[in-house]
Image (cartoon, rainbow over all chains, first blue to last red; front, side, top):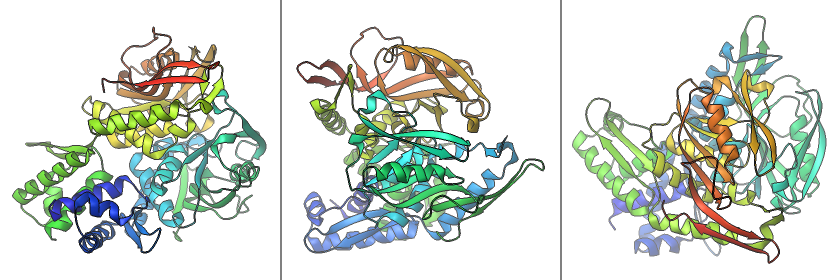
Length: 268
Length: 268
């Protein structure tokens, strides 16, 4: 196989298998090349990813070593993504009353979701998580994409315990947004005792829902290593949880003057 | 930019933007090359996709023409995917009683979901759909991935009408699986009158849920062009809908003998 085709084939295989660890033998055998040639190819492919702002390749040598493609996003890419989200969020036609905004179109847009998932992958890929966890429904596409980029299984916490989930563990928690007690439920066979999780969700106000997730995972001694939230309301300033990473903050929803003020998380 | 790097950059950009139509000027300007060189590059990149079994490039000339990458999967890839799904589905530890199987782990597995989404993308990409539609919850990752591969917005039909969805249209329908009347609800601003949709779901028994989807979309004069369903139960043979594409059939769930029989859809 010619070098041009090899480079193309490498980029195609790596982008389709994010965060998968490849023994270098895999590609040497596939392409019928020596390890030195593969090293050159990998160096070039890494340059392509870095140049395109789509991630980088991690190489490690020795037993258990190999190469893996870690999807990412450039600083410019993050800024553009945030600007686009802010621009869309500040459209007053999203106002639903009661301090709610319509955001489903953003959370179900493949390009926006992929950008946000790349931010979370870049930030969380080295934490050693076993699962990506979300609560149904609106954050599922973002959590699913993040899980795929991190090469981790997705776990979806349900609002009701469903028969098709088999045996479940449920908790009740206080949701500030809806001002009432809500339920969440997780399939026992979806998770292992003592595992580690990254939580992804579309929106956070007071953090009641995220606190519920921490609590229900705690029933399995599962530690939450980090939380990535697409949109976080600045109010209330005091949240029920610490340790969350927003993409965008919403500072103000002024229904009378039909004005929404959003801003970027500058610390990504 | 050297040819090697250009090939890598092209594969990276195209795989990250499936089914997006690019004017050839886009890449000529980006790489500073003539149209003839780009044609050679595109030819090579198409060979890479076809060789890897990951899709192909469509080129069209003239006004409104350009190139786009259509994700796909080889015949061998489909067979391997189906074999893997059957192998996993026939594991008796999935039996939940009442004819139910635990399948969440399969529906939340990024690699399996990507494979199934590639089958649907390959089959449905030229139908001219405006949306990919699913009903929450278990089919969302598959529907979201299919929507991304087809470069279409995702629409999620909810079981309850949520305040955060704004104004909604709801219907009641008969679900044979749960043997009762259920509700589904769609946000008015999620869809446009007279559009065309592809429906994706994780499971179908009698087709009551899919018939409900056709009906609720009919409230907006939206035509369902095709339906892709991961797993379809062979029983009952008479479904409430026609025109659906399964990946896998389940022929038998024998709880007494703890035996599950699944088979491939051979017509993909």
